[in-house]
Each structure stands twice: as C-alpha cells, then as structure tokens.
Amino acid sequence: MKLVTQQLAIDAPPDVVYRMLVDAELFVEWMADAATLDPTPGGRVRWTHANGDTCSGRYVELVPHRRVVFTYGWERPEVQIPPGSTTVEIDLVPQADGRTLLTLVHRGLDGAAAEAHADGWAHYLSRLGEAAAGRPPGPDPFADRRVPTPEEMARRDHP
Image (cartoon, one colour):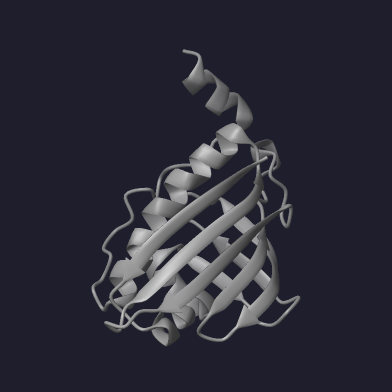
C-alpha cells in the first residue's frame, strides 16, 4: 500500500478551512454536488460528484480547527475501494501570516489507485483553497470524470 500525501498553503485561517471540510453546504462549493456530513466520531461522511460517483465512510477523529480524519471508499463496486476501506487524515496548521498549512494523508490505496487519488486530491484541494479564500472555484472540470477502475488504470499504464 502507498500513501497519498498532499500539502497546500491556503489563504484563510484554520477555522474557515475546517468549516469547509465539515459543513455540507460549504463542502459542496468545492468538492461535490451533494454531501451528507455528520462531523462527530462515527458520523457519516458521504458525497456524490456530478458524474454520480459516491464516496462514503465515517468520521474517526475531529479536532476543531486542527484535524479531520475519516474512512473513505467508493460505492461503485467496480472501483474496488469499498466504502470505509481507506483512511484520510487532514491536518491544519496555522501560519504566522494568517494562512493555513493543510496536509492530507490518504492511507490504504495500492499503487495505481494511489496515483489516481493523488491527482484527484491535488485538484480538489486546490478548489478548497480557492473557496476558503473567498474566491469561487468555478465549474469543476473533473465533473464528468468517473473514478477509474483497476482495469481502466491498467489499460492506461499498458496501452
């Protein structure tokens, strides 16, 4: 298994970034078309992208304005990453200039899936950064992209 690690400096304080991660109304501004978020330990995390792909899991740990940990997976069986089968850890560190250093670690993905998710997280965290800074991220260019299956990833690697 590989780790996916992303880091991003966001032009907003940690309390704003934290709300963007746990408030469903704010979450849909940057991540998905619909979200159900119950930010309590054991609470449900579920969002659906415009293409119909749905991700779901449960909150594991929440430290207001500092840390969000949840399990993660896809409800579409052919993706072969079942709901709750991986873990996403997001840490928020305040910076002296008022910004937030966000670090995301996604654990439990194999090589090809880790690469695909690294690209996805980079894209969506960039959108989070825009939204948290008060700049609308605009239409999602990934809106029509489905989560690749292992077979699709293998075909990309070996044309």
